[in-house]
Amino acid sequence: MNKLHCTAFSIFIILFTYCVKGQSAYKKDVLEDLIKFNKEMKSDRLVVSIKDTIIADVTFHGKSNDKFLIYSITKIFSGVAIGVLIDKKLIENPEVPVATFFEEWKNDTLKNKITIRHILQHTSGLSSSSGSRDIYPEPDFVKFALNSAAITEPGHSFFYNNKAINLISGIVKKVTGKSLELFIKENVFIPLDISNYEWRTDKVGNTWGMDGLWLNATDLMKVGQMLCNFGEWNGKRILSERWCKMMFQIPLVNAMRGKYGYAMAIRSLPIQDIISITQQTVDTLNQLGLKTDLVQKLQTLQKKDDYKYVELGTTLNQLLTTREMEEISSFASRQMIPLYTVHNGYFYIKHGGEYGLLLTAFPKQKKVVVRYLGEKWGRKKKDDGTDNKYLIDDEIVNYMIKL
Image (tube, rainbow, N blue to C red):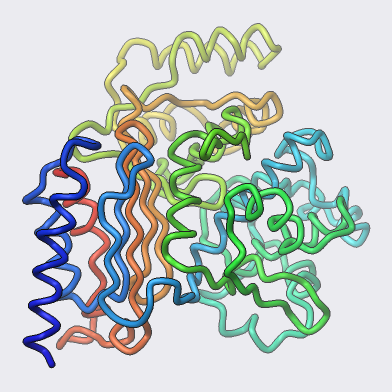
């Protein structure tokens, strides 16, 4: 049986390579190595796309249309949902306070400062444990988040917060009267031709924001392609380009080490991770009314134009107080202006799910990869117990860079 499977797999490689010849340019040997590596590392599904053309769609186990729980990759749809609300002018911008939708926060001197941006960027300051084990037993995930204590000033520190992201589900319901699932179905899934999905709810009917979505790999690929094209898929505009550019911004705090955009992780390519807050951006902020002293401090950054992420973050920490960084971030967010620019667009979106699921998109190169790994192998630890044995996110990213 194993021999037969290997033979069939080899035939697939030969036929597949022949079929894609002459389409999107890529390195055939790198693709073959990527597929073989995923087979060795127990992947269930692997889908690779370049310039909206799928160049590899491999099912190692199960069926091609099998749905998988994508765990934290689900969070991306919270950022997408807020973008749709803004595009539809149902909310003004990501600086709208969460207390606008939940009266119980209006008299809390910390919570009434928390904005939608803080929730999406994991800088809300709400208390949260690592993981989600304390959330699952709760009957109402939104109420559980609302009742969380605020332990730091909003925008002052990054902490990955599963509890807080569920508030987006509550906000969507308050604004539209629809569940997050129905809102995403109507505005994202239907335009993307996605119908084969399931999405968990809590006991009172709130769609989970932190995880809980089941999708097949080819449908998740469509989401990656849409993000790669700054909100467009197959000729359909699903999100505004303006919002996508905001989604790809990481917080300035913690020396920019959070590297987490609006509900999705953002990384720079190893080949060029040079970024800057450009003169044009500083001029725009000045024209729109940012405080003169803050403009002058940002102006000093123009002495150098080849910062790396952490280098720029460290410089900002030395130049500005945390409160000043938050004031600048809030002002830019209210105006929907991306603060920093990645030179030549060399960055990628990377969001993983539990145990080894992965969605990675490279907007500049128009490359997307989806890797699914089931729990059977995903839960297995390395011999030293330090990490999941079949977690290969970095290796896949490196293959995609070479492809």
